[in-house]
Image 1 (tube, rainbow, N blue to C red):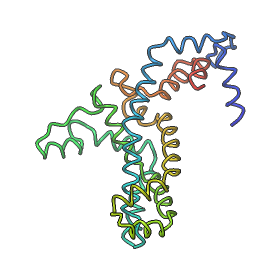
Image 2 (tube, one colour; image 1 turned 90 degrees about the horizontal axis):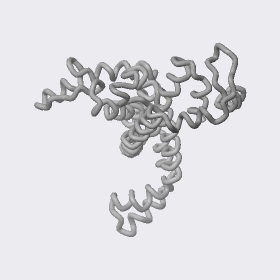
Image 3 (tube, rainbow, N blue to C red; image 1 turned 135 degrees about the vertical axis):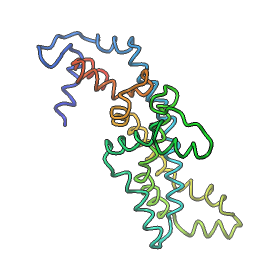
Image 4 (cartoon, rainbow, N blue to C red; image 1 turned 180 degrees about the vertical axis):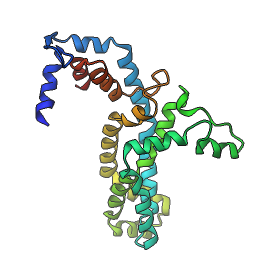
Length: 241
């Protein structure tokens, strides 16, 4: 792990196609990166994806954790149901959702048509492709739900009892007891979710290849293409750093 990690620092200061000798170019790769429109496009796409997917995912995970925070067989069953999608292969999930988003015979547009709504072209639309991938990301909130569930179960019950004695209703108990006690857990999932969102790759690679018109061209997909399609390993290492 450490060897490629530190080697990439040196690679980023060189022009290297992995086939011929390296050529030292100093900061040229970094300079080119900041003057590259594709670089800024990939940054924009990734940031917008985080804004769309991360808050929704955290809120949904917390709501699910609250719903299944009961010690009975039915809730135990639903914990497993909600968690199972998060351990499914990323490629398999992408293929499944690509079918669901198909504008002609996909299940999502079929359901919308039943409601009298004309569904969009989803992955073929520059306007809807990124929101579609953000919607798909909610499929894997089960792991975050489990973390929240552990946090909820660690909140001392006497705090709820004291709040109830003081006349706090359910929303007030959630706002003044649950959220403050859960704040370290929420902060942890926020940081980890942001890291995971910045590393988004499989969805775009399998479903859209970054299209249409760079609408889903994530940062890591740009890095991958530069390194393994265009053989600009030095520039890709600069992107990584």
